[in-house]
Amino acid sequence: MTDRRPPVLRASGLAKSFGHVEALRQGELTVHAGEVVALVGDNGAGKSTLISCVSGALLPDAGEVSVEGRPMPLGSIRAAMEYGIATVYQGLAMAPDLSVAENLFLSCELRRPGLLGRLGLLDKKAMRERAWQLMDGLGITTLQDVTLPVGDLSGGQRQVVAVARAVSRAGRLVIMDEPTAALGTRQSQMVIETIKATRDRGLGVVLISHDLPRVLQVADRIVIMRLGRVVADLAASGLKINQIVALMLGEQDNDREESLPA
Amino acid sequence: MTTLQPTIPARSVRSRLGGLTRSTPAYITVALVALVVVFSLISPEWRFLDATNLQAIGRNSAGLVLLAVGLTFVLGAGHIDLSVGATLVLSSVVAGTVAVRLAGEPSAAGTFPNAGLALVIAALAAVVVGGVAGLINGVLVTRLKVNSFVVTLGTMGVATGAAQVLTNGANVAGIPPAVQTSFGLNTVAGIPLPLVLAVVISLLAGVVLTQTSAGRHALAIGSSADGARRAGVNVQRSTIVVFVISGLMAGLAGFLDISRFGTTAISGHSTTMLQALSAVIIGGTSLFGGRASVPGSVIATFIPTVLLAGFVMVGVSSFYQNIAIGVVLIIAVWLDQLRGK
Ligand SMILES: Nc1ncnc2c1ncn2[C@@H]1O[C@H](COP(=O)(O)OP(=O)(O)O)[C@@H](O)[C@H]1O
Ligand SMILES: [Mg+2]
Picture 1 (spheres, rainbow over the protein chains, first blue to last red):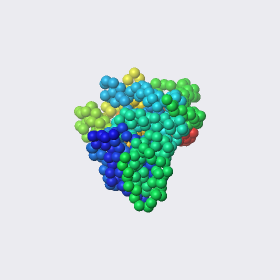
Picture 2: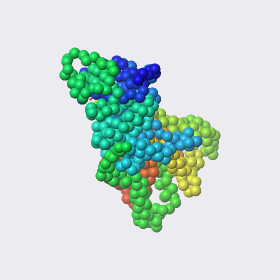
Picture 3: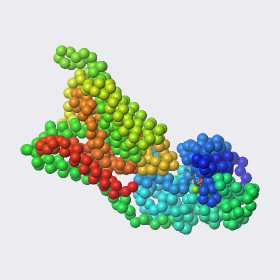
Picture 4: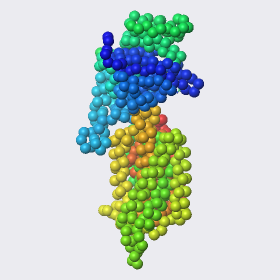
């Protein structure tokens, strides 16, 4: 599949240190529209640091990010959101006292039509209804009430709310950092289906996950990180899990593994 | 199609007690009514229910209501503002000074040529001083990343000192009495004008808290600053907004203060901040942020003022007011902790 447009995401030369820890040395990541890129690597490899630099949650020490060819200001979650990037973070990114509906629309609230809206009044009813549709669209059958505080949900339910929020907000790119970590088999499979649907809408998707069989089921490309560097960028088709694991752990040989383009 | 079926957790203690939070204004109202009934029964000839007594309670509560409403936003956002009492005093001193300077020389009959305009400008000055004080608090908390307890403890001292420096520690005399006759002691339909103003502002504040993005973002950062930030909330701006709201309320309360006494009351506010803070917490706003109720705060504000009026009327020393509020505060915080977090 060739695409004349610039990639949805091109991140290059990203670096980030925390004190003495060089968490990220050579963050390179390219994602095209309608493509699912899996980012894999051992714990501490720098995956979350890399995507946080892209999502605006972290300000990298060096590097550039462009979205559809436009350079994006770094270190601002709001800027990244305006460029069409939405993220499911590892760990909670919710306000537990606020309801499911309130969290789904947090910072993107809908206002009432007309004068009342211009005065700043929120359209709570519309947000509740849209929230319900979103959760329904993800096939969540047990969450009866979108007015329930997120703090009252199970870990899995929260994770699903986070996924729903990201896919409903993203205009160009959805980043998911271990979105299935708190989920059971069926729920994980549902997230994979959501990723496919998002890809089919023409968005780019970055998926971080340790669940390699599922990753191989959905990813077009696999980007492998080790010790803060991207060590391989491979087409997913035909890859074997043990090949990926070997690259993740650096067991093949101690020199560089070249990228094998598709 | 596969469906996600996360299991619903057994309803947690937190959520069961959460229902209590939502009905806080209801049980505060019951407590307040009970206090009124008790004081009415034991006051001589039901004098507690006299219009003059009730009006005095209303007048004494108006400023406290404003402070409590401002603190509701600050606490909801997970911060604290210890400087509200000091800001009130500083605003009242500035307003009083402005009024005296602008009102002109009084005539033999004691009327001031520019009293009306002078008082309007004085009121604006009080609000501006409060807003600036709140802005300073907000900027210090967000830029220096110093805990709001420490920042506002510091600005409390600064504001108190500034008020004393401005007047050499003396109260401002010579404010046109119209501030009392046309506003502070005036009533509409028997209700003190300052209280009407405070209630109208509280209603607006309630709408802002529950019906606008500003209110929702304040509660979001109080619930989880990191979560709100990752959801795209401008945490710094929201934080500054809540401190400015608190400052504006304290500033207006400063003007109400001179309209009540006809002069400033520099040393009369040592327990004001604690009273307002207690009312907010008793009214169901979480000391830990994330949950807040403007109606709860407003209703709970009347608990200290009713206690004081009642104690005075039945001949109990007013010192017991502080003891009673202290006890009620500890119980309220304890209940708040039971509710979760
Ligand atoms: N905020 C932080 N402060 C200090 N060290 C950090 C921070 N975030 C990540 N690190 C360190 O950076 C390295 C990469 O972390 P991370 O990007 O979270 O890895 P991954 O997501 O691949 O497991 C780890 O050694 C981790 O301990
Ligand atoms: Mg990680």
